[in-house]
Length: 300
Image (cartoon, rainbow, N blue to C red; front, side, top):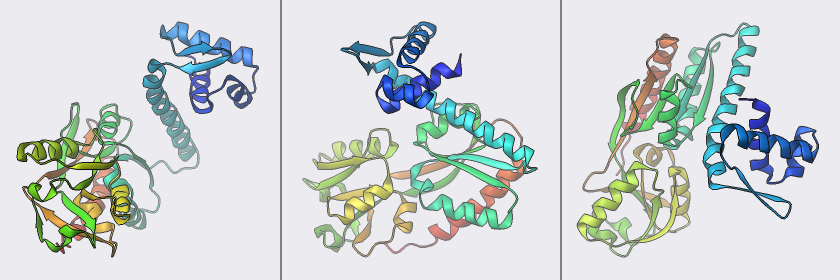
């Protein structure tokens, strides 16, 4: 596959116009149109609808762009790796982490690891759990941290965190007076929900349905840190992971236990190959120390 064709496709999906793509590539608009036609012929997929001089991406184009973006990230990583080898810095750890750990927890781990191993670089990608799983299965990274269950195989897994989700709410919320929240307490309550791709959403929905509880969904997000920010704005209560609950301290947000337990199970994942295993193990040691220090703190 000619990467220049994929690059043209990638840019037009970003700019939305043939003219913008032509400017970015330094080519004529007719040349860009021919490149897109050629890509469609090679893939045997209709990527764009032509409407009055405009190109409108098809459903197939939107489905393909995620894979193309991943391919270009891999090419970028390859260039970074080559530069490190040229400069004599051959050790570099690549990892992918779900957002719950990637925003606040991961920087702490990288900081601890880098202080102990200043000559080893770290390249991290924050992805949804299914994306982390895919990258590890495809050997695009050496370590992944993602929420179970997994749909793929071909990698080693071990539990990294197994703690229950907790409920976050504004400090002035009526439920803040309770020490323990149950599904019945959420009847007709405004709730900030996880998006459908997050495993906790399915567990939470099933629990509420079983209890016969109806809620009012005010917003959805895949980012636990965004949930805390929305709780601070008093948009509703939110079920958040135990790591974010400890790291996102806010005087306007209180945390309460939720029963029955909804498990937040995060596993570490490594592809089935042994290169740089010692480096991965050193990084995991730092991650486990940070995890243990955090989980030892519990004020709810």
